Length: 274
Image 1 (tube, rainbow, N blue to C red):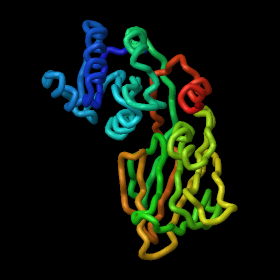
Image 2: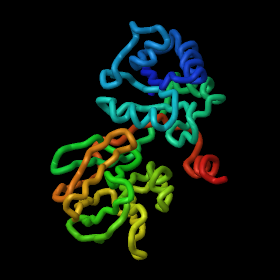
Image 3: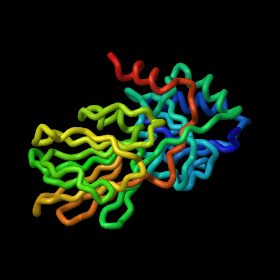
Image 4: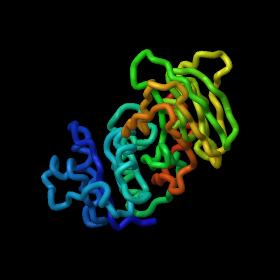
């Protein structure tokens, strides 16, 4: 696919990010039409090209920042749009392109690119749809040092009832994020599954689970007067309490990423293995 329109979303709070956006603009000049998120447009003095992210109807989005910039973009975009992430953050597992390779890679993708689809988690509370999760949805205690008591049900079958500091539901893409840090397995993004990881469980038998992506996962809080917060990709929070039905299924619309040359296992070795 050869793009005709490109949206640029940048955190624009560092000199490196601003310089990278300016480099992309020079390389893309005359090849594609470019629009910017309002913050970037303001920083660059290009308000005439400012477009809210949810109004970006473009062929491709280039983010300049870290993984958080991509996660915010995914929650704001009104339809699935291929994303290319240039990493000026820290680890950059979703923002795959290193700054030193960005100029050459942008020139390449402007001539055409392939799309990689990644599964997301659809999340609802009592039937109310929440933003889908690219990495994970974490259910954590609203009060520090207080333990939660919850039941996990898979396709109407009880998986377990346990006490823990919280629970993480992760996609294969998110298995290398919070879920991995909590002791969960690393899952190849090609595997059609989701990961369930208890946070500091209060029994030895509570262990991470890998379940089919077509499962319906229901989590219920069991103790009254103990609120929890569901956090989606670190971007969206909602308070939940006893009696709420928290449901997770595979989202109908996947996230789309511009395909890069680096394979998953090479990326794990390069970014996560010391």
